[in-house]
Amino acid sequence: MINNRTIMVIDDEPQIRRVLRASLNSQGATVLDTPNGEDALEILRQRTVDLVILDLNMPGMGGFETCRAIRNAWDMPIIVVSVRDSDKDKVQALDAGADDYVSKPFSFDELMARIRAALRRSGFATDTVAKRISVPGLEIDFDSRRVMAGGKLVRLTPTEFDILRYLISNANKPVPHRKLLQAIWGPEYGEQIEYLRVFINQLRKKIEPSASKPTFIQTEPRIGYRFTLPEGAARA
Image (cartoon, rainbow, N blue to C red):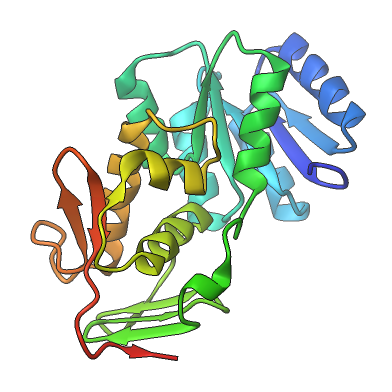
């Protein structure tokens, strides 16, 4: 799954970079590593990277700032690895643009599972949803991953888009938290409800006419989320 992939490791601990470089190389990945966010951004401007592994505690540009800067310019998955293990830190990292969060110390097998899940884009069948959806205020082309909300082009991250597509593929039905987590992140997930809260909030800000009074993505208390597709919605 990671063979021929290029992975960037941003961590100020030389030993961590050395171990990850050797381990990921052994799985067929090309590894670019750097001790700080400033150098990472410069490398990203010059090289194509499939996934970023990012530490939070770094000198100079901190992990959260680096994460936001990467997410503002690129769409590759970002996995944060950190000794900081509070829910607040996890939510802040996800809100900054991370796709996943791994606490140090971690096993390489665990990290590999997270990497595979992050790289697994478009992992569920595309024929479960129309190629295009058009409702008042929202147009989605699933083949080109193009979203128009309120007549304006909206940029969604890969994870945001996959969540949206999965909800629409189950339109007008409640999708349980566990089912949604496992569909997007993989079968080892199911309890990380804070992930969904962050990404659903981000989606609502981007596609809803009013994020505080959502029209499309409804919360099903104690269950999950439902995408409301009006009757007569144009599908192609």
